[in-house]
Length: 81
Image 1 (cartoon, rainbow, N blue to C red):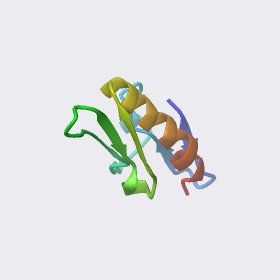
Image 2: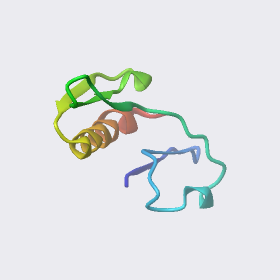
Image 3: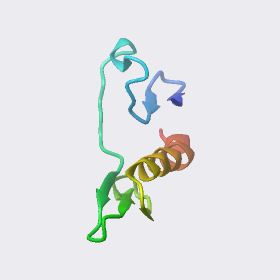
Image 4: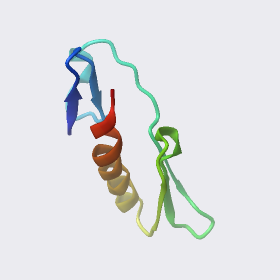
């Protein structure tokens, strides 16, 4: 789990239950993407909530989830305020 802490003390991360984030302080959680199946049963990642692209299709949901996390950590998390 990657955590970005700004000089002002604001913490940004892709939500995970790897650690209890409530121990850091008050949480504000917002959706960064949607992982949904298409009509063919493949998985698509829609990163439009963070002005990102659509990724996929993926044959396995787990691959879509990994791609989602990788993209958010590389593109969104590195540019969070």
